[in-house]
Image (cartoon, one colour):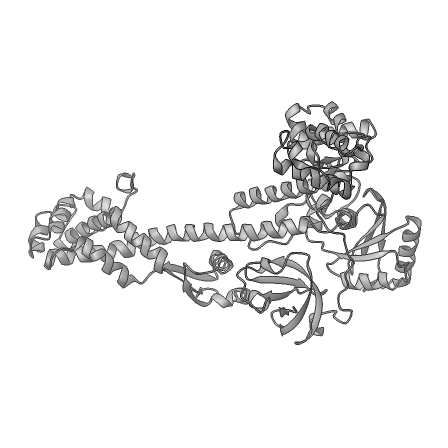
Amino acid sequence: YLPFKQKRKTRGTIARDKGLEGLAKMLMTQNGNDVEGMAKRFLNREVKNTDEALQGARDIIAEWVNERLSAREKMRKLFKREAIITSKLSKKDKTEAAQKYRDYFEFSESSSKIKSHRLLAIFRGEKESFLKVKIEPNKAKAVDILKPMFVRDVNKASLEVEKAVEDAYKRLLKPSLETELRKELKEKADKVAIDVFAENLKELLLAAPVGAKKTMGIDPGFRSGCKVVCLNEKGDFLKYESIFPHAPQVQKAKAEETLKALIQKYKIEVIAIGNGTAGRETERLVKNLNLDNSIQIYLVNEDGASIYSASEVAREEFPKEDLTVRGAISIGRRLMDPLAELVKIDAKSIGVGQYQYDVNQKQLKNRLDAVVESCVNNVGVNINTASKYILTYISGLGETLAQNIIDYRKENKGISSRKELKKVARMGAKSYEQSIGFIRVNNPKNPLDNSAVHPENYDLVKTIAKDLNTNIENLIGNKELISKLDKTRYLKNVGVMTLNDIINELQKPSRDPRSAAEAFSFDENIKTIADVVPRMILPGIVTNVTNFGAFIDLGIKQNGLVHISNMSETFISDPSEVLKVNQKVMAKVIDVDMQRGRIGLSLVL
């Protein structure tokens, strides 16, 4: 298509307009040495001398070379096979801000082997004008491949064609194919980065919940104080207080008195403390209250809490509360049920991505939405406590139907069965069929309503119970009885996979794929990066997994990095083979760079 494409004004088209295409054709025949004589025949008012004529003819030939399909294919293969990506510090910017890209000030690597994270970092540095980047193979080799395709003799005309070939590569082919290769490399790097983000997000969404417990949420801070909220076991907001135990106010005694009073009044069972600024200091304050051992204390990752507190979702949920209260509520609810709370936040803001703002945003959004939907449907939702926002991710439900369910639930003081959902406005047969298997009803008349068994298979379960001489209530959870089942009797009704799913659900009804939450403690002696020294072995939590390593929260402002080479005694190609987000680990300190705020770690196996 390229030869027929509508051209903008180029050197070649200008030369054609001057009537020099005939000269270009004569040169391409490569039949003589009198190129000056050929050129004189094409002089006119716009072409004043032979040098101008020959230059114009070469410009036309260069475009022919550029548009030759076989030439472009050979160059394309060369670029894919042998192109080298190089980056250098931009001469105009040697500021301190550029230091984050210092690994790429004099960088060179094969474009076919470069890792996605390095490529995205280089492209970001280029976009921010800190780096100059080129992607090309050896120029001499490229020209040597092209010459035999166009230079067919040894004379002055051939010499002109050779000059045109060199110009075609430098001015037309190289920039075009470099752009093409950049696009291809970027697409591959985007896919890898999006895959990493999706896997991390899945682990974060499926983090262990503490469940329905009376919860205190604390959004810690120094100058602005700590925001404290109390929530009931359903996550409903009950009370808000501010305390100022830290500098500059240092009202420690008053803060302790307030916390104890709130814990006693609202019968608090668990305490969630944000892990941001003043998080560790607030955790120590709470632990020193000498609370009942049954009250567990958790540091909660608060990434995205501030995004939620300023969002339309938060304003709709808590129109009368300010941003600080909403943030504390989000921290508390995140401990109770991470999935239900995190679905309200833009996934990119949760903090488990890798160059998430540099990749294709449409592809990223589609993939992350799919992950959220998959997680929500995998866990299922309690129809009487689920928020509108988590309901929108259930298959078959959208925003309108989710709101209609909430409205119906309020009006009728709850939903007692799956079948009752058919009464919800605009709940059609198809929406009901798609969504109902992911919806749970607590304490229903039919125990299958609180399971993953789809209503279309209820009759099959009744038949199974009857064949085992029992009822559904006694069948559910009775592994010994279910083990006696002859599966072959029911394969005429459903497929093998569906039957296995039903049996697994009957053995462990309404099973939650998430594990139970466990309290975790960082090393009490580590308060800042200054306390970290090589050879220390410290407990930590994985906060982010990339394709070059994993970041570990050690309980201080700076996360440590376990490079992929320090994760295992044997070779691994992907850090996710070893570590997952939220995994608790022991790590050994390798080095500490105080100037750059970096901590190098190795995994203690």
